[in-house]
Image (tube, rainbow, N blue to C red; front, top):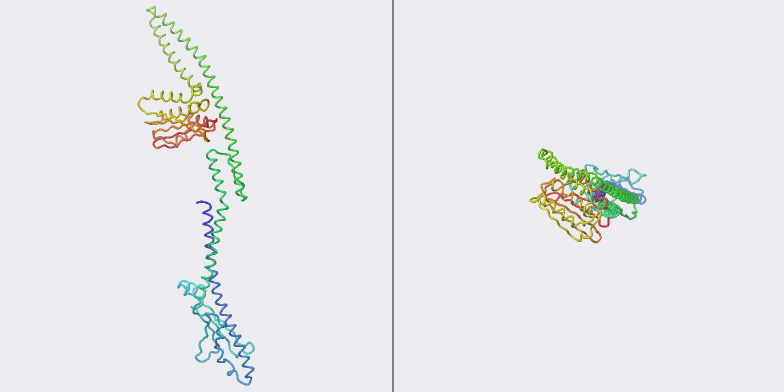
Length: 456
């Protein structure tokens, strides 16, 4: 999962937890608000009755307490205004047939779900009654008792929670949305870093990254740039060393070819001359016919050795592609393989682009790649068809593509991991010229592709 999605998912989990905590807090606060409304109603009604009590006491100072309070006028609309919705007030001591005076509870909210009422009742319990004396100086004046109507209290609590949760939910969605945008904007440079790493994986080591505002991302970007620079330098140094190694190897091969030609060639020629002389001399004498036959066998063996030596000298010297041109040498290479394998496999040569001026090291490398790939396909697979395509790509790419594909059903992974001298050699040659070699699975076999820059 992408890092942005992970962070956004974790943010949503945190928002959900905060929303749940806000719901619990709103429920407890709603429960306490009913208790606060109950206490406030009792306080207001007791103060109103106390004022009424002392007024009646001043006006009717000669009467007994029973004639002072309660007075009929206390159950009035003014008193109703002092009682909060859903709260019932009872005067103590109660009068005959007297019912509690309750605040308006209709329209205070929708009926709550049954599970909510049961949960509140289970975890928070019932609301306690609140009592207030009418007069602190005369305890015989009576008291006011206020208690919340259970159904009205639950409805009030549910309405309070719904109002708060709506606001909290809108805030949570807004926070999640804007925080997600901020996270995505903050981590946007990570895509540029990943793109730079992917370019480095394809050999484009020197890649520039902008200066990021975040300190951590800026440090990562700088580390990636430094790594790319070091890889580019190491690749250049390796290419120089590889080219030098190839030059030394070529010099050694040429020196070895000269030594073989000068020493072995002359000695073999001398042996052949001596054997021919012995054979001619012994042929005139009938008794020495066995000697003539031995001399003839020596001559035949010497000629075979000389033929083998000529083939070895041809392989040791530079391929003719450096002097004759790539196209002619490839045609000759394919024709030679076709002559050796008259029936199968069928070798197709596909030349695309102008190859007339492709000479020198590039031509020699392309020739070696084609030669090695054809050799491997013919010797190590049951291929029935081999396609050799040489393509010259112009423009910004300006490279030579050598592509060999067979239908021998080989394992591309094993071929790529092979440590044989042939593949290792062409890898070194291609890398020395700044190119790339890839081995992949084809439709029915193995595909080898080498890209060689023409500017090398």
